[in-house]
Image 1 (spheres, rainbow, N blue to C red):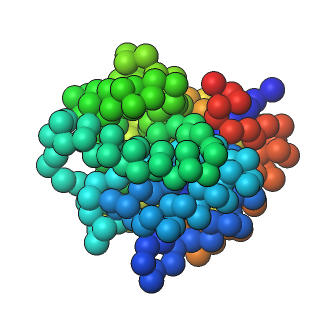
Image 2: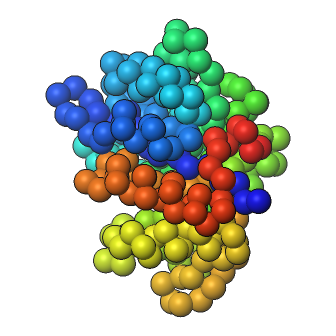
Length: 255
């Protein structure tokens, strides 16, 4: 029996700006990565998203990003490992306040956007992020790109880790995601995305942009909640996984 977690980035509305359909998507995913105000989100959105996740028994994750609201945290910044550590601790504390106030618990931490991609390649940055998570709560699960430096740093630090794969992104031969600046970065055909995910879970393989098969570990699958077809895709991918004999559970029930 193959078992996998299905996670989605959430709580990305802020002020007068509404982003995503979190309430509906929460019915189809098992883990939620909640923005903490740096790249997206605000206090009211954090509270509401935490409440909805608890109500639907979805695993709550801290989703710390770079302090870049205008760029949605997707632009790389030359930060030091110490700055990365401080950013993660700060944002973990912010979400922990709301989770504790609502009577819930935090399950995991998953960096967002550029911070996530930078950590996947930078061992020093990854060590700082893993240390921040461990010092705040060593019982949490650290999400990172499958085969990347963040997963390695988490394991070395003593954290449980979850190797993450992407349904709607293409892969390079080194296991990294194709940059969003490239035209072939995103997979827009739902059937292609589903086939890629099922193969990653069942065979632990993925076909790269250069048509090469590489090994990959899939503990958790990311779907993006900010696209126009996100809700429909969440439903489709969950049903397709079940039809393929793959059980969907939150990561804390697997790890």
